[in-house]
Length: 132
Image (cartoon, rainbow, N blue to C red):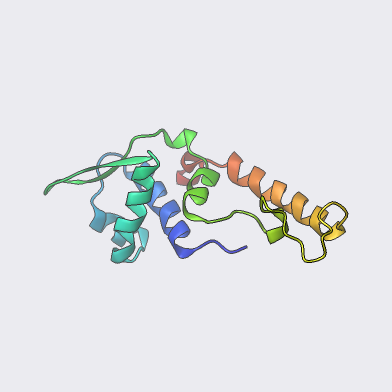
């Protein structure tokens, strides 16, 4: 599993907004976050749609947190940007298996444990933790 660049940028954006506090202009997000300018509108739209941030328009406009970063997990943000969080297709809801062995496959059991470990780790870290 490899997260998309957009996911990385979203995490950087949330950390930056947490660290800065208040209203942060898009240009500052791009420059200080090391984020390509054309990604910022895409990222903030998704974060806004999920209720994590909001925007102020105008010359002194920008983006700010509306949710407490101590209540936002890394899993929350990653799941906004990734189509799937699963390490293998057999863990998806349709349980696809080319061998029709989802109930007996030892490799799937490994994937399940790995998935549980990853999910647990991502759910245990908050944006506030990362911003420290």
